[in-house]
Length: 130
Image 1 (cartoon, rainbow, N blue to C red):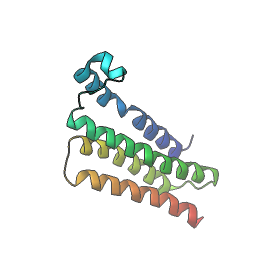
Image 2: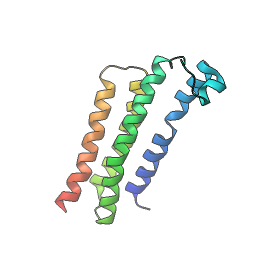
Image 3: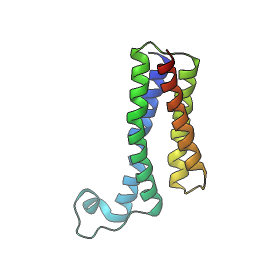
Image 4: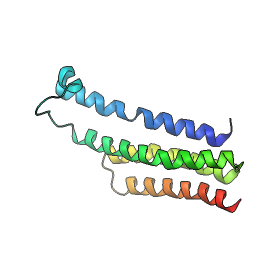
């Protein structure tokens, strides 16, 4: 498996696990019955958990773009130092993004998102330039 696919795997694992903390918050606040049920007036999640839910949705949306780019690059035989580095940078940007979003760290969330965008753009450029 090439390095870009390895990073795609780790980005997917990260995205797949982001729901765990906010579900634990939901269980702690609402109890098991309301957490798994459909209560009429559920207690709101903690503010940090609400932010993490938004970060998770953002991660899912961006995983679609990242995965498509990595898979197209792989199918086209476009794999080089730039694509490998872009995939690694994207992963770490996606680690930082939900942490910064969850803990409401000013500027860092936006910077992490922007770095991830440029990592995706780098992969796209490598595909186009081939």
